[in-house]
Image (cartoon, rainbow, N blue to C red; front, side):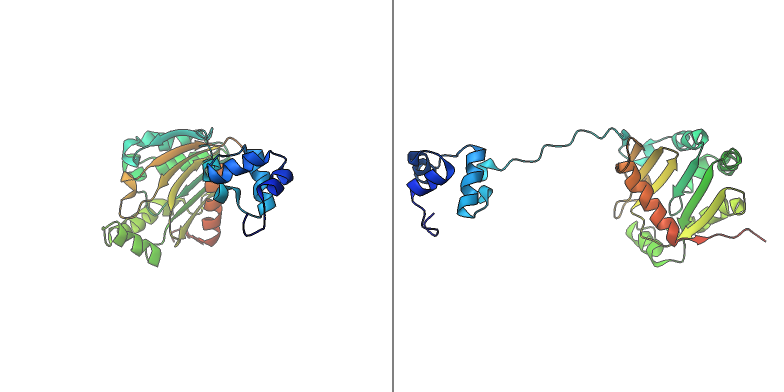
Length: 239
């Protein structure tokens, strides 16, 4: 007020309050109603929260998303049947984005058969696994303190999935991206395995999403799959 040459009476007239109210704001620290405070701040050319910090309201926490079906503390808590049952129910698409995820084949040896059956029933199946020779895969091995172990798992995953290359409606690719999440999508359901620095994926959280509306969390992850897929290299059939 001093910098702008405002008197109590002048500011009171501008914001349509009694001059004594303005005096109380200044001398007693009284807080005006929000609408009045906004009007006064505009007149003074100041931020309303700089003048009255108590009027700052925290944004209300968003209710739990209707897309969130379940949240698991770590992937190891989830039976492999949760993954395979989702795939078995798919009618249109199955997308898998991982570095290796060899636990699927190890715990469910029929995985390739299941994917082949789904493809024969009209599903488009896309599988993206890590390129064992890429810098990002090797860096992940160092972060997990597994060294070359993750590279070996990527090669093992390629051995598991390569027989599917050339199967109608199934495509296998290798990618060299930094993998922030492993994704397992079956139509409008998706398991998202978060990656945590220095922690193996089996000990990291997983959230189960069901698509509820466009441009929600589900689509955010689905779009990220498409972005990685566009950079990936097709795997050829074995000679």
